[in-house]
Length: 174
Image (cartoon, rainbow, N blue to C red; front, top):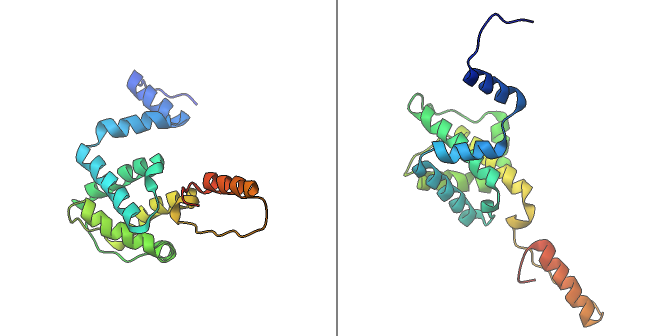
């Protein structure tokens, strides 16, 4: 197929990026350069607030941060155009039920981080999807594990097992 159209170098570069995929690190750098510092701070506050509410350390998941920045920026821009209260569709309703604690934490902390801004349940559910993805990606950090082992072996064996558990569970008080 032959196109009888001339494209500028910038347009060719744009098409090449679309066809070959964008380097993710380049995309992350673009986010930092092109989003306002208030939004970046508010997203950090949201992540910290949800962590405080449910105890899962979402700060270790960089992808969550960048996905939230992108998603929330788009939603905040749409708020000026259209702000309709919609009900949850069945998929989002399932997300809200399955991750009820996370849904409540995101709903409460979004309002705090974004100066009282309220989103409808559907928008909160979409944000919960980002958190749920991170939640499932890092399952060890989501809850404290209490473990008591009783066995009659040498003390050295117990210490070896304890060290392995500390390493595997990333907890210091095993």
